[in-house]
Length: 336
Image (tube, rainbow, N blue to C red; front, top):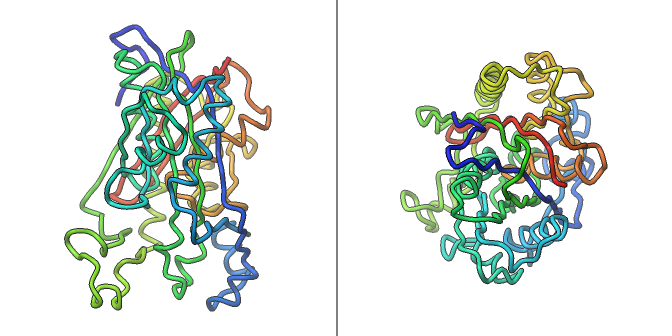
């Protein structure tokens, strides 16, 4: 757990946000012609109606660069003002160079140092916390944190239990020091003992690409849905309750709870366990599906650009992803 009273006397806020989703929309009706499923089956179990799918020529860095440009513009800064770029992704363009360097090239942020981070669907929250440390310590003044995924190539389109879940997209936030409370508290956790419950075994050093591994399908996402659901709800709920208790904040004082958009059932379960009102729990999974590391920042950018936030509003982010990884963050909004 890290708290919002930094030893260096600097609090950290989100100055600007941006997002981007590919043009192509894949609906549940279209999926009916691809795999043995129905719109009713998908929606009743996930709350999803459609998801965006990147074109063949679009890579994760392409999605990330557009989201980054929009966030920088929203912050009133320029790419040359960025000191650091952190891309949170499970679907990098390639093993190396890192996707952040590719984004740097695309947007012209020549002053920034760049690296990637992988924490699956928890990635963006983890990235915010890493970026906060650089700003708090005065190691960087303007930090660009991006959550971006082109997850569609790693989906088995013959597996109806997983292929309906995921979509592509990207979101970005510019972090800098502020005068308010900014990021107040962060909790992060992991449990590698449960790694096999949500995994993509192939493609890395253990099972590098070969004709045999490609034929076996281990380069696709594999998930034990019921077990993942159980651990996602329990760990996200506990992290959120712990952060509220530690900060002394009541759930009634939170403007929006923004969970990882895994599926509607998980989101509803978390909202109920936290005692939140339906209007507090933000959900856009119906239109985007699960965009992994991009989901929380896509939702935040939507809220911010929709004029739904005012200075001083409290936001509670909760996330869960493969690893397992999970976390919660409490933030006071101020992008003035």
